Length: 115
Image (cartoon, rainbow, N blue to C red; front, side):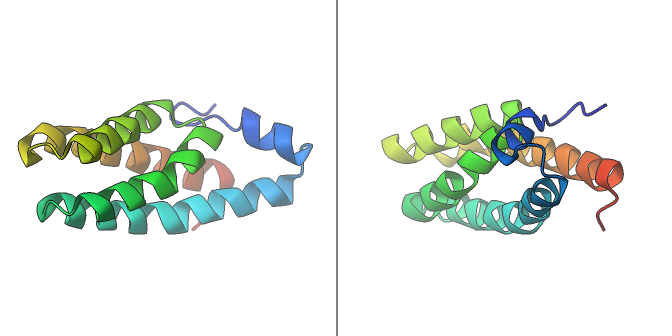
């Protein structure tokens, strides 16, 4: 049973098409880590536009895959970019986001036998 993600929305929009679900999962595993790196770099140099763009790009995927805690953290990061806050305000939020994505990724790889 999945703990860190929920595929109910994916199965719903795909009419239970397993191949489609696997494509979505593969895209998540390939694209989200890249965008997290972009976000981390943006936070490091206080490039609010870069950080926002990366967060905005992964937000729908986190919602679709039911990675709810990470979704909330992405919203917090996006809010931080809009108010152009201090780095220390967002570092812990980013760390928690990354942890949630890593846990979901590990679980997805295991449950769906994706390398």
